[in-house]
Amino acid sequence: MILRPGEGVPDGLTARARSYVITHGVEVGVQPVESHRQWWLGRGIPAVLIDRMAAYQKRWGGMHLPPAPVYDGGPHHFDPDSPETDTAGWWFEAGPQRTAVPFAFMIGPAGEFGIQADQGRWVPLHSTIEGWVESLALAHHASIRARRITRLTGDELDDIDLDGYEPVPEVRGLADTWWRGSDSLVARYTGEAQGFDFPGSRVALIYSELS
Image (cartoon, rainbow, N blue to C red):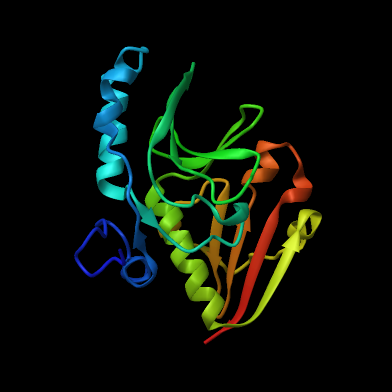
């Protein structure tokens, strides 16, 4: 089902992100979290975490958005699953992978959106799921407004001069950040580099001559 204004679009988004979700978002069916509650409770999953998962699903569950330019597109859609824990707290899956990637997309103990590498290393990309959605909307906006898009990888990122640029606050960036200049935008993606301790996998996209 294609999302319509006022139908299934969470509040708290910028006008740009809201328009992006309304225009490009599709709602897919998901199984209610509550159907798993007793099974999870019986295996020691705390009720407060299940409540968090249910709230996440109510707000975001079933939303399918176009692929991100990195992380092989990001989650296929948003749907909580697979709760897990360590000494830092509890995580749950943000949604299934769109493609075969060596990490899962997770919601962290403080609500961060990030990736959990196969070897268990957690990297928060944005401080909230809203930040991830804002980054998708901004990438779409920049890709159609820029006259030139430059992709840099690895050590090339060290040569980016951000003097005169300001961080874009709505993306709530952690490992991934956006920067705005007078007529350009810079997106820096370092999640995989941190998750796998491989600086060569850093990526930056520079959107120049924005109209």
